[in-house]
Image (cartoon, rainbow, N blue to C red; front, side, top):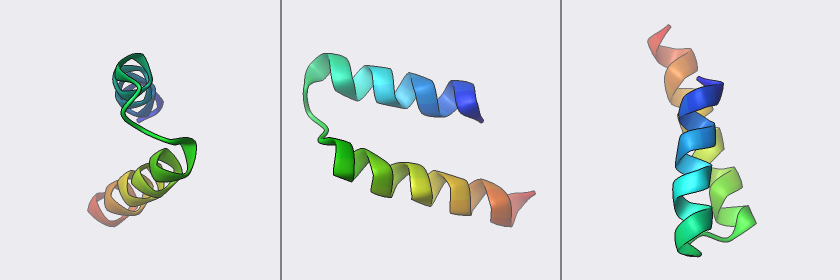
Length: 38
């Protein structure tokens, strides 16, 4: 999952679309989702 998160972060960082607090919320959602799936 780290590679996926790193890829998402890199994509948004390079476009300058995502603030760090927004990314934190998204990564929490991703974590919650992957936890509930597995």
